[in-house]
Image 1 (cartoon, rainbow, N blue to C red):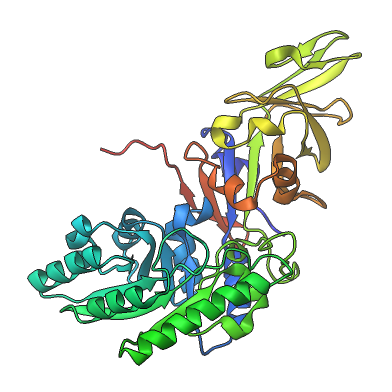
Image 2 (image 1 turned 120 degrees about the vertical axis):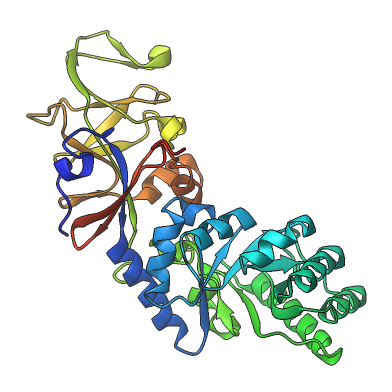
Length: 401
């Protein structure tokens, strides 16, 4: 795989030598594979909440839409407005709660709301009437996640019926979310789907229908094709990762999009008995060549990885030593010849024939990929790469009036 040079990534070291590299070709390929999996007859809503799981919502949204996705989903109105400000005109659904007080902003930005109360729905309807616009609503249904949504029951049917009768309201969709589709045993997912289907049937009997019914997340997309309905909502698999340790992607067709890089800022040799980092948890048994890296837990490289992880330098693994600091960390490069300031370090990703998958880090942290990529924060620029060239550098900390 062709990659930009270190000089290109750091702009000849005039930028802080830390970056998350986002492979747009892989993102495009992942979405094309998702489209192949789901077929041509269903809609795909690409989930780009949380800044596209840390990858950058605007660039990933555009890439997914150009390669098979039809719509987008975010978690909040603010995230949706960001996409609209970037001139993205595809339908956008807010998966979380939107207060009725924000009705004007919602409608003026032509964004769909998930609703599960009559009060919010009425506020959206009233504002739509005032503005002479329509508002598209998706009824959220709680089939067992116990998060948001109507719990199916006669009162809920009656409430949704009242919402459907509000002026200037389009009953665009109805959806639920699986809490356990990412395990091999799909018993609970089938139970949730049954509750969802039954609720839809009862609403239909009451005269309430929808343009799209949807329930499948990444795991459902991969392993529950009978539940795809009108639309799927893939999340983590778009970014190249398994839905879980029990629900795997085809790694030949769906590949990780993000990798994390930096450059060495200092190299020194310490002697026997010298200690590295806060708390002096690493003590040298003899001469140790130490490289300092300009990245730490404030960038999302978790302190919990201290002395548990490796990095790649010159295509070889180097052990991280001492506690990871807020802004820096240290690695043992004694076994790697000719290491110097400015050399590239890969904290997760690929370097030559070697790789450190992000799941290696998340396993050590006992967490999920979603959390780690979301935590690569705004101090870390995103470099968007296509065809081996940087096509955009996103510097979150660049001053704007």
